[in-house]
Structures are given as structure tokens and as C-alpha cells.
Length: 431
Ligand SMILES: *Cc1c(COP(=O)(O)O)cnc(C)c1O
Image (tube, rainbow, N blue to C red; front, top):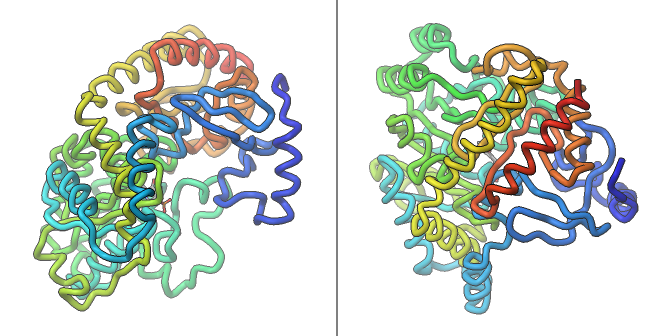
């Protein structure tokens, strides 16, 4: 290995005696790629520096929030200014309204927003709202989609759960998991059949409209349209989990990109600008049922936190002022053109998928998969070599073949061009 990681290794040894697996969230542990994780000292723009002084071009972006890159000056200034006015109030304040207005303005059909402190809480609470509103219990999700780590959603979930080879988690009661039905993505017939049999018992159908936690499994719009049609027909609510896609693929999320309006939508990541935030939203008529107006309970000590609201607001402000999405699409196209050139020349059993600033390399033959079942499970071997080869040249990708990469506004054209050269050398080492 070209880079010296002795200080990181020391810290990881210490971490193993303190944190389970040495980490605060499983995929950070590098189990899927081998070796031990890099400890980060500081980050700015598209780069971070580790505790051994190595500098890396970052395509993880803290797993999605950092659409402007690390420590964007306007976001940091907003956070500093907010912090000086108090870290948390536990009482209403104006920035909550400003951020909620950004969501209602841009996202189709959202009239009311409730803030949480994570994406997990947002999806968990949206499901409780759907169950309360419909007086039904059953939930439908799709295999490979990740919606956070609450009990009823850790069934055939993507993200860290895939790497650990468990479709669900120990500790989730069978009685709870039994309320969740898992169907394959991209299979209209399977969905229609299930709904015609059990649709009247279903409170909600939840999906990542741009599934990005089991690779990037881009869906046909016909499939998403079938979800809209069948849920309406059977009186179930359609929930779009836009925790990754919200404000990343479009200011109005995947709902705007596909022109399909869900009943409820969940947000996180970008709307917190790097601070811990989640939110769920939808029509006023549904939210009348949420406490304090209605009998469905949901709460949070730090919900609507002023520092987090400030970070989210500053992020969305920069996104809109600078038309960042247009630039990210051009940057994504540049990356895609470069990578396609390499893949065509090398004829390796590998492919590349992209939606705007989200991208994914897959390490098997054939067309880009549209469901989790089509993702080869033996692709991890070549990915580990590819990942290591990139790391050696200072390019940081996610330490798992199931995780996507993210471009940010801080990435320059030359960063992308250099990454393409590194990817070319790494691919030839992987095969
Ligand atoms: C990250 C993610 C979540 C969970 O959000 P946390 O803030 O990690 O709890 C939920 N849904 C999707 C689609 C995500 O990518």
C-alpha cells in the first residue's frame, strides 16, 4: 500500500476497545474491502486529510449530505452565526419556517413538514402517520431499498445490511417483521398481484424512487407509475423516501424528475447541510392527524435544531442561487464520458450508472441492474482491489461495492479528469 496509515491504524486499535467494531456506523469499518478505516483529521471542499497527513479526493461526501463539499464557507458562516444565537431552544424559531418553506415550495404536494434529527426517524414517523391515517398495519417495501434502521424497515434492506449478508437484523421481532412485505423492484406484475390480494390491508408502500443503497438501481418510470396507480386504487399511501435524492437530483427530488407525486415524502442528508436532520412532509389533511393536532404521536428534543436548520438553509440557498444542479449534471456527464471511454477500451466485466451527481460502478457483466436480485453477489472481490488501488492514489470511494459515489459542487473539472485516470489504472489492477 502506497499511503502510510500508521496513525489511523493506532487510532483504530484504540477504537476497537471503545466502539463496537471501532465505529459509530457499521459500513465505516471497511469490513467489505478489508484493512482498517482511515481516520479523518480535517476536510475542505472536495478533499479531506487523514491523521497521517494523506490527502484524498472524496467521492463519499459523508454518504450524501455534502452536495456543496466539505465546510462550504457560506454553510460554515451560517452555522457559526446560528451557534452564537444558541445551540438549541426546544421552542419555535423562524429558521424552521424558512427551511419548511423551501421544502413546501420545491416539493410537489408537500404542504406540511415535521422535522426530526435523522432520516431513520423521518421514515419511521412517516410510516406511523400512514398507519394512523389509514387505520391499517401492513407495509410494503422493495428489496435493496434502505429506509433507515427502525425495526419494521430492516427487512431486506440495502446499505450496510447488504454487506453483512443479512437481509434483516437480529433483534427485530418476527412479529414486527411480519407486518412488512418485501417485493422486488422493477416488477410491476408482482406488485399488482400483491396489491390485488392484500392492498386493502396496506397502510403504505415505501420506496427510494432512485434506489441508491444497493448500488444505483435506476427504475423505469412505468414501475413508479404503477405504485402511484395501485396505492391510490387500494387506499394505501405512497411514501417516497428522498433522504438521498431530495434536493440532490432536483430541488423537487425524484418526484419532480419523474413527475409523480407521492402522498408522503421523507428527507434528510442535504436538508441538514451536514448537520443531523430529517423531515417528513405531505398534504395538510394527513398532518392534521399528527400530534398536537391529532392522535398520532411524534416528537424530538432537538427537532428543528437552529444550527441544523441554518446549515440546511445555507445549503439550499447556494444550490438555488448558483444553479448548482446544472453544473453537477455537466460534471456528472464529464465523469460518465471518461469512465465509459475506459470501460469500452478495457472490455472488463464492469459497468457504470449515473443519475446527476450520484454514480455507481458495478463489477459484473451486462446491463445496469434495476433490482437487488440482479446485483451479482461475488462482485466484492474485484471491488476491493479497485477500492484499494484508488485509495493508494488518493481517491476515496465508499468502502463497499454496494454504496454509490457522490459528486459535489466543490469537485472541479480537473478533479474529475484526474479521478478518471485513477479509475482506469485501478480497473486494470482489479481484473
Ligand atoms: C441515509 C438514508 C436513510 C437514513 O437516514 P439516517 O440519517 O442515516 O438515519 C433513510 N433512507 C435513505 C434512502 C437513506 O439513504
